[in-house]
Length: 314
Image (cartoon, rainbow, N blue to C red; front, side):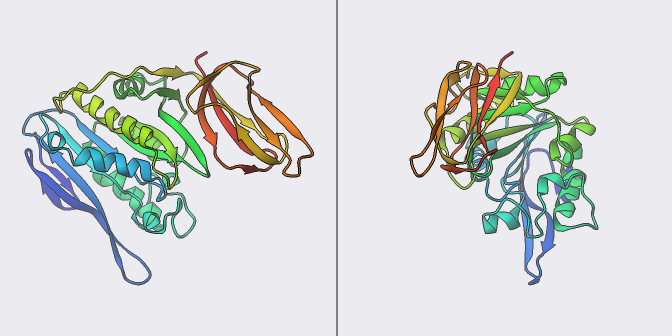
């Protein structure tokens, strides 16, 4: 087993260390460091990356990683190594915002630039310091803009390594999701490092079902590779092949009458849109038979807004 070198810090087999990814400076000369937790066994095994807080308002993923890295069995791995970054986007986390102060989305800044914007620099350091030493990873996110995502893992079905990891993690829903430009997931794939995206809950709100599913998925994945030795309950999952959004056909008040994650039949009434003045009420019908993947919790919507995310197994 070789030593890890992250930002000039050496982590030997059998060592646990918390080190900064790099140091960044705000206009006030305040320095910002991104803590990277490294746990290493003396025995050979895979190196897993768990990362969260890519967007500063995605608190569920941060809580998932907090729960994982405080476990004694994780801090004393049987084999392999774990690299955990609970909050990648420190600045946005401080402000409780999705984007960086300059308006950029950190997860559209990859592969980054060492002389670029703050987001580009963080992305560059992730690609240079972290990606070369990992084998695979899971990046934790939540729904944005009032969207509550049912616990799900997103991967690319055409790449068997992605789907195999997703099945080992075993979130309730596994969704075939194409790569997006500028993301950690896409740039990692170019280097042969499969990274899955876990989605659960909504921004700035703890969802304990999503948190528990995320924690159990991490433990299930690590146990599968022999990194820990604990009892983790198996979890049935549904593989989503196609997905679609139901959008508002009128502006008004949105009511949804199905549970997140539930199955709905094609043409079933799943909600309604109402005028706030009581003039009109329009029923919302499901365009497909499938599962509720995500819900817009915003009660006041405009025409064209995304309301319900549905996924089918066919």
